Length: 540
Image 1 (cartoon, rainbow, N blue to C red):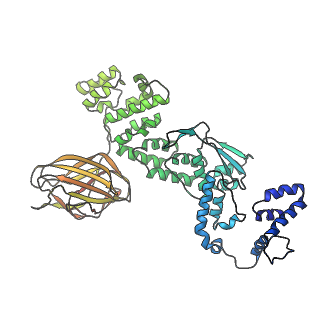
Image 2 (cartoon, rainbow, N blue to C red; image 1 turned 180 degrees about the vertical axis):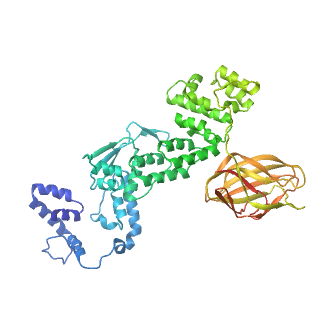
């Protein structure tokens, strides 16, 4: 013990000293003494048997009042965080070395000291070799490929077992095997690092590129809190571009809450989701579940075109020649889930009928379905999808008109709003003419922090009543909770219109709460208490 103590205090030379001890213990001890005497300050007792640093350690056993580490080193805490981050950055490259013999004294909390051991060779008793050597990874911005590195992690079985019941069974269970090296080819190195960082450092480090792989690792090793964090990350980053892939993954990982969130986005923004690149990457089972969906808010011709794009990608995945017959082959029975008879006749005649995917008999029967009094039996579903029913948030308690209001001369009417749950704004309800029938041109826009999320230019006809008239965006715009968005409209019309009054700052619509505040973009008088944009039309 004395020999080990001296080696520890002299710069982590214990391995060298212990090797020397096997040869000649006496010589090794003398060697340690000679090295330690060089560091003794003037005035120190020459007959001391231990280096002064060891005396300092012994003095900690006095009967002085005990203090916590945070009380002893309060001033070192800011620098400690930096040091921990530096060590962790070294650990990411599996190249960590500890230079200070008393490194434990540099870190205030057990969390920070534990973090130093993250992927560190020091005291490691098990090694994981992670990654698939045959995989490739495309580097963004460089346009080249490199082999997926097989990384080796230096770990401590005790720490892993505390963080995961799977690791506990591996190292301490009845069937535990004494292995120094464990190969894990099915987990990506970046995901395994994120898992280790959570177990060692109590930190969650997720990114869009690694979150799915990290969720897989968290599920595999049963680390539920990290898995929940991954799901939360995915839920907040859901969009029409990635929702189809995430739907497929959520079913694979058995995450019903994430699956439900995915369906909400797909239903409301169906056409954007079906036209996304991610739709072509889904598996056949997910394809069928989407095509079967009753609440898809999309034209059937869009559904048909999306299915053809998926079939083309599936031919590439199966290494089949790209042909009409192979597209129909990979679609299989899923093609009958497309409700072709519900298309507009022009869409069918100019699209599906000329695609070549349908047989001549199917094409003829569908034409007869459109035109004949006696309709043939079809394998295709013939009932239109129900879609989603739009909801309306009305923010005024009454409306009025006056002889000099509400006039439009190219000025902007604008209002800001926020919601407490994710919704999809499909358009605005606007007031029309108060002087009889009139036509208006409306340019609507939806912004977040100055960035336009959706806009459209259209016309609507007002019949002279005080009713609101809908004006729609091309696609519903996804609205995240607890963030203010700006709804704007520039109307062009000769006639005065109705306007709202007795406006409310908070409106409850079903399970969604809307909050309103004035917008600096409004130059035509619209605000919380009165003006235009009486309704927000949305899906929830």
